[in-house]
Image (cartoon, rainbow, N blue to C red):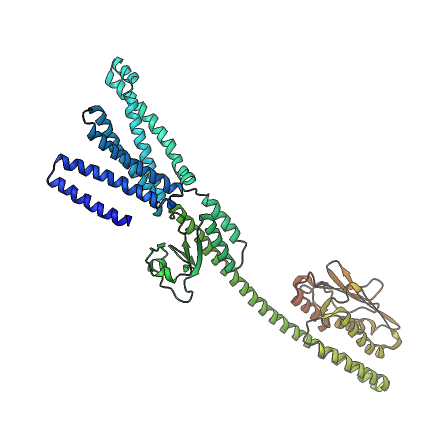
Length: 549
């Protein structure tokens, strides 16, 4: 109703103005000026009374009062100047007041543009205009002071003195204006818009997003940060392709901010009420999300520096999305590479184990063949033990790792077969540290070493021989050792799984398996034993520090 009344009275005033222009009379002009002044004062007063709940913030209340005071001053000045026309000096003063009161109206109107995005810029420039006007008035007043006028008249060259005084005054006032102008923007942000340090807020948001590794949590943190910083009713991040498909404006597709008016049909489709601002978010080189903002009815409109903060927050979200997707791609690539590496390693281990099984079977069958002629009963016992050994081999053929205690139990069974061949010439000692009894080691890792010790060390030795097998913990590593007091292995020294080489299939096989499973963390050393014989040492990482597959 107030808007309708304002439109009607405005139309009446326009018609009256043009009527006065076409058929001017002093009475009509006076009536028109009074009607304009009264109309403005009445409408503004009615608006402030009817909508006083919207004047809660200083950015709305103070400009409204400035406009009302400007209109009232202009109205009273016009009325009084016409009433007291017989006082020429007073009429001049009132006329000046009426003219200058329009400055308050203009400035108040600029301040009331707080529902417009660039209102902060209008307010800053309007304050600069006001300061410029005050500077000009101060210059004129100071120039006319009696002291300066007398000094100029007493000078030898009055015009030169006057020019010098004016230059000094202008320089001083312009310097003061520059100092005040430097603080206007900070004053407007702090006292009118109560703006926080948006740069610090953007840095805080960036730091927090860098610690999050979930897209949904990233969206929640961004929404909360934006809502808290700008005191919004709600902020929501929506994927551009989220079903049901929304009819986004074309400007969104090219990365432009879109403001929605109250009658835009898109507002009814969005998941939050009273949405009024859409901020596009680019990810992977194209718009992927939209930040939808609803400021709420109690909050003033968003201004340019607040919209800039929204764009910065949206950019931080888009950059974090790119980083998360890059991390996800890297994880997937590493996972694929790990799977391929595991498959290659397992295939290599199966091939290496396949080399041991027939080799071991061939040696065992040779021993049984010899016993069939010399001791058939022992040959039968050895055949049964061989069957038990191969059941163990077949049962664990698909397992790259086995517990140390299981491996040692297998070695005892295997050595029982060899004892049938060696008889009383072979003495065996096995010692296992209980701390590492359940640690896992590569399957059949010790059998080839034991076989070499029997075949090349103790076999050719006349008389009794001794075989020592031990396993102990060395910090985060395990040491497996096989020693014999035989004649020597006859193999070249092997320092590790990568550099050294041996002439036998068994030890070379062990070196390759250690390299495949543990890379540089697994080692095998072969050395002559003091007092005769050979010592083979295998170093393996324990499971809590290993990188085995």
